[in-house]
Each structure stands twice: as structure tokens, then as C-alpha cells.
Length: 58
Image (cartoon, rainbow, N blue to C red; front, side, top):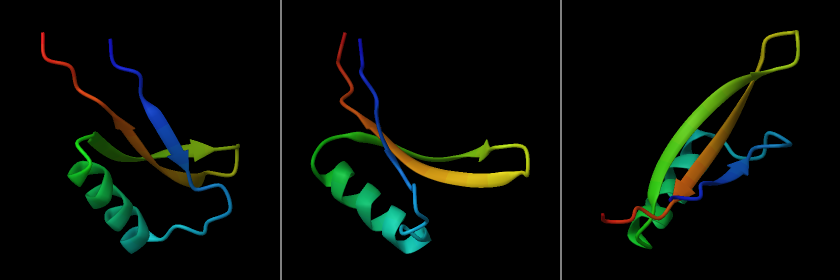
């Protein structure tokens, strides 16, 4: 079973380049990575996040 960890962009401090760099570092460390976005609140605000996990071979 894989346990996914999420790095949220709470204060809007991570821009697109920062998320890409962070993802690249996680991939080099051996993690599977997903950059995602989700709607937050009723005003249609978008929150971005970087999700990472270790893939297990079965």
C-alpha cells in the first residue's frame, strides 16, 4: 500500500517553477510525483499541490 504525502501551497509562495523544481528533486530521490490542483472555497479559487509517494513493486 502506498501512502501519499502532500505539500500544499498554503500562502501562494510556490510558483510553477518552484513546483517543477521540487518535483524534480523528489523524482531524483526515488519518489513518484504528481502536481495537482483543486478548487478551494465557493469563489473558485485554485490551490496547487505537489503529491509524492514511494511505489512498491508487487
